[in-house]
Length: 66
Image (cartoon, rainbow, N blue to C red; front, side, top):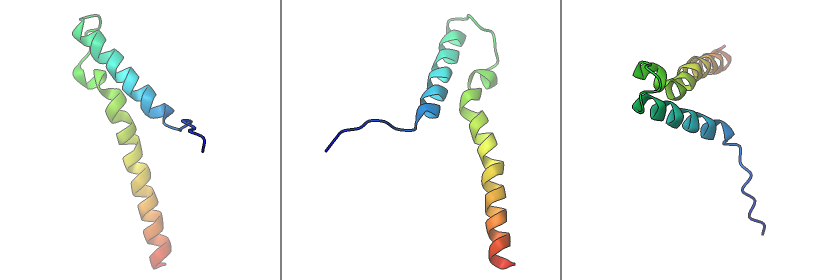
């Protein structure tokens, strides 16, 4: 068996790395951003995913009952 470690988690790694960079810059006082902006790489994808999930649920509900 081959141990292939190719995975599709590049987006998760990017978001985590960007968050760590922003937190480091904030704690080293290089940037003077609000913590909302510093932690935005974490919550922005969640805010984007929620309406998409709700739209998919509404579509599935509509196709099931009509």
